[in-house]
Length: 456
Ligand code: ADP
Ligand code: MG
Image: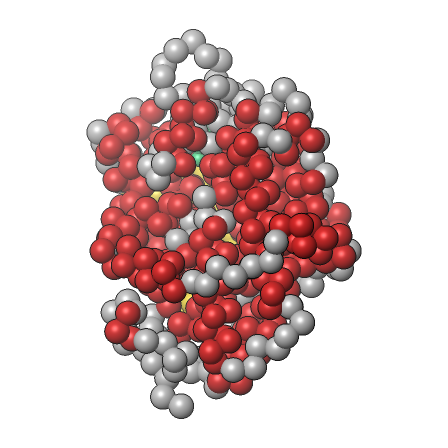
């Protein structure tokens, strides 16, 4: 069959808007394209779903099924584009076999929160999003996706699902902040660590099928598509088999410098040294999320410490195969998630080459009283108004930052989710993040990423 290769990241970002930072930057680059494609897909989506009570009834049974332990082999088994129609259908069926169970587990976890917390309008909104998404998938259960028309409609449901859950993070952040009287920071961190790590996997599964669809579907109508790009044989779905971190750092660096310019009126500088030409196989959206958050922290510290003239130094070192097999130990290990740790993706190849990126700033470092808290969700020392609010966790001040974040604005800091969530992304494929502070001088952040392995 004739297969048209659409460079998927453009299509995917346009439809899915995977992460708010990324969305903001792609909108900066090409607002028209994004808007029109998103519109096209909204109008094409069929909103057939089952009632909420039927969805309610389905949850306990689905949530009693174990979560399939994702492997990279699962993500790449349908092969490099162009896919045969059969491979695309089988990818759709595989995706459908995973998602309802994953959503039901999340619904169950939300139901297990104290009732007063689930009653909070923001937490409720997230709960309803999950109920809604599950209700759009249930009609697909028990029937086989056997032709490309089904596959197109199923992909539309997936695109809507990904879109529905795009703004989850500021909404959850706001909800938990409003509930801080009723639930302890430790409980919140436990819930969020599970929830957000599970969300990474769920989005990855959905986005992988959407990406395969857009890179392969012979039925895809090019007239309504983003500009078709030259073939990009380096991609398998959302995985770039030759991702160059130096390029990601430069594009995220200019995006974060833009935010700094808006917030502080200065653009911090950065230099890249080490081995800037290193490439490895990884999910670009994940790397973009992590780098954006780490650069926000480094740039903010640099500016607030009055060190604008000292560029942030980013050193890229290819990681020899197998040296990343033990987790980074400089930072406290992330909360033990018991069975949930299994949600982390299984590498294709334990000897996959990876990369270590050191981000070194002269931002004054992190004081001993702040350091123990930096991995907690919602902990921030950022304050928008210089009032006499003591800085730290759970400040009311965070609410104004969150409002800015949920209305699509980009702030330099304030949610307190940057470090813990970046670590969740890094650990997803077996890497890690370590923070080394030299108080009074600056901070070194070591980001170690394990590549996703050999992909044929
Ligand atoms: P946020 O940036 O929204 O405050 P993060 O999780 O990204 O949340 O960081 C938590 C806190 O860790 C920050 O508020 C800051 O106090 C501290 N921190 C992180 N990175 C740095 C850095 N490079 N230099 C100084 N402090 C840092
Ligand atoms: Mg931050």
